[in-house]
Amino acid sequence: MKGAERLVAVEVSTPSMARALPELPMTQTVMVRLLRIAVAGMSDCFEPVFRAAGLAENSFHILCLLMAAEAGSASPSELSDLVGTSRANITRLLDALVDERLVSRRTAARDARRQVVTITAQGRARCRVMAEQIAPPLRAAFGQLDDEELATLARLLRKAVTSFDGAAMPARAFS
Image 1 (tube, rainbow, N blue to C red):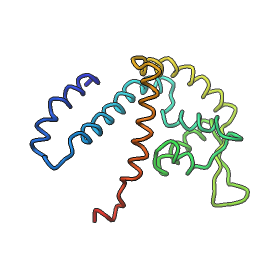
Image 2: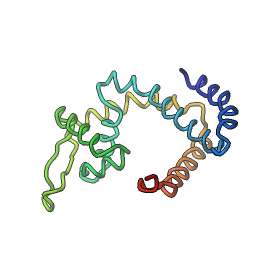
Image 3: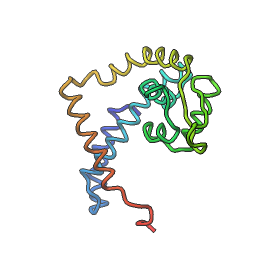
Image 4: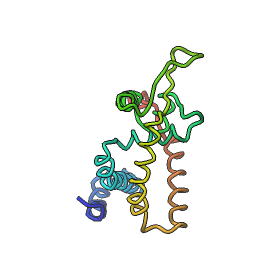
């Protein structure tokens, strides 16, 4: 299903959902549905590029973060937080990047419990090539938005992200 079809499905199903679940705030529910559709659309757009390059999107994100980091290093927990994935998944991704010699991993000098991940020369080269490959589809993905719309979208998404932080309920609240 394409994005336009997904949007039609949201529009068509929203009135009946509102009738079936009057206690559900529909404006916010539609926002969640639109965000999920946007994320699915991004995956549909970029996944073929990453697949052709033989690199997972999160792995590329890790390499980009390490390229930007001072000394090209970060801890697995920092990377997990910045990529937005679980500690278990970051470990799996880092294992694959280590196997491909795109990053190295060592124990921190000051704290033996802490690991330090560093991008290798091979990882830097791969990241630069991948950046060149992803740039055209990235520009095209947002090509229908002008600079002002992009700035507005970025501002609103940042505001939503911080709003989610404030609204998050501890798991025990649902017990």
